[in-house]
Image 1 (tube, rainbow, N blue to C red):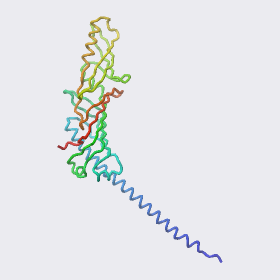
Image 2 (image 1 turned 60 degrees about the horizontal axis):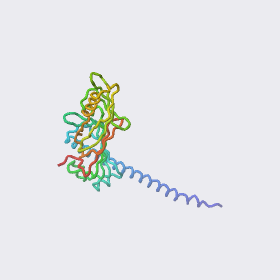
Image 3 (image 1 turned 90 degrees about the vertical axis):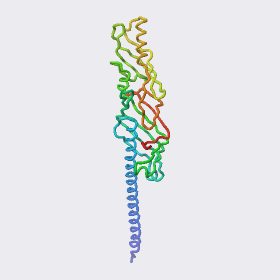
Amino acid sequence: MTEAYPAYEERPRRRGRKVLIGFLVLLLVLVGLLVVADRVAAGVAERAVADQVRREVAKKDVQAAPPKVDVGGFPFLTQVIAGKYEHISIVLTDVRGNVQGDALDVPQLDVDARNVKASLNTLRSRQGDVVAESVNGRGTIAYDSLAKLLDRPGLTLGERDGKLAVTAPVDILGTKLTVNGTADLTVTDGKVALRFRDLTAEGLPNLPLAKRMLTNYANSISIAVPLPELPFQLHVRKVEPKPEGLTVTADARNVPLNAAG
């Protein structure tokens, strides 16, 4: 007669398997709750930083759409405990600053703040200092906005072979011509210097006076354009002509991201 011992041996295994599966499900649920809590906390911090940034931008008399803030690094809660955040990304759109009474448009300014220090109390109360060890900014100045500062009717700016190009109508010795050329760009003391050289105009009379008038026009549009005061103490380091506009790269160190003090 065959004994039924094997059937009784399977039951403990099944119970153990069910316990293990239940434990894994519980563990996954707990992990999921922690991830949700982490992201909720990050969202609270992002709103707090966005509010601080909005106040700082207003303080600089710069107009912009509400900032978009993204706090990087995971897990976020450990950063809260330490009071130090690896990376905060800030995007400002529709930025407009004043330059000697004229508006200079920057469609988008991307700011990357690293190693940001902010205590938990600061984030809760929105009072106190939020300080970034380093800040890098990159924005693009619209060509139309820059051309208005040159105050020459019909003048347009753009990019050609990696250089800032100009096209403008001129009247030389009673002849209407179209001037074309490129500019050298340098950054000094918060100003972008435009130096237009070797302008050409098809049909220009081969006369010394006509050539001198063309040179005088080039000198008249070769100016140093002061940039509006940028938020976050950003200092412009480089400008590059791009198809979409004049790209400005700036940076700063040990920067308060809020308007406290």
